[in-house]
Image 1 (tube, rainbow, N blue to C red):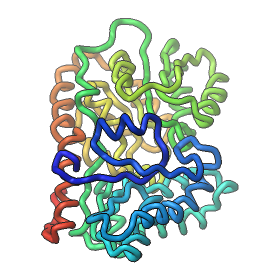
Image 2: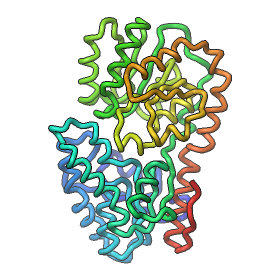
Image 3: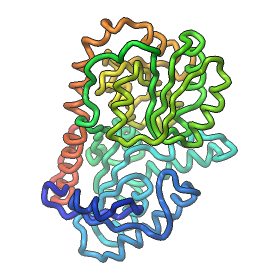
Image 4: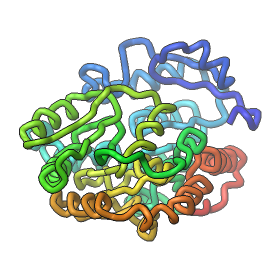
Length: 372
């Protein structure tokens, strides 16, 4: 947006080194200061409920006539954006990087009863219709289909998928050096990442291939700690979990691994998410096993580096063993083509251009149906 000459003001949670970020990206940050917000903040879910109403006030205080477009980033801010459209009379583009409440389907029923989860999902999917949004960027074709089924016009939806920084995740020079096999997973390690599927797969692989190391790259969240405590009861279970790793350093952890995994439990949220993990694994040239998430299965169904299991830990483990037993010569010659494809289609740069093209069409009133 800035490169195209737009003035960008970002309303959101406080971040470290705000002044340096403003200088680097040429934006103006307007921090939310009433309380700490973020993925790992205490009482996060309760804060999510009330945050949109305070965020709306923060943006409205800037005054009408200050903006040509409100671009909301995530379902939480979409609630505020919808109210601001009415309050300020400004076009609104809602970007949904995932179906946020859909992940709650994997939560225990005593935490959130299923009827409550279904009601929250219906509300989230209804936001574009409820507030007459001028456009929506959807994370995947699957999510776009759900929005359209709810009644939002398909020609107002731009599926942009979820990309990666191609410069940060280059194709590795070759397979890892000889030694114990390393199965890697990186990310935020929420509840839906490490459930029964991951546990049963680890148990099977450890029994069949003693010495295999499971490497977890990312913050040691309560979800990861719970999984590791349980998995350490498995005889000969070996793991690495160094903790938070800067984004620019993650590719080094992938490059020295043998196989990457995406053992997500099934939910509406995981089916809609265009999972960055699988993109970054393939970009690095890493053989991958993933559960059959609708969003990524369509894109990667014919990719020689990706095997899809069922939503079953034993089947997932068997697919993982198949990669560990496969001769390098059976997949390495095809890794370069797979990596090149995601680099050309899923790098942040073309994805951002597509989203900004769409936003500019909304502001100018020249929006045409986006290309999927």
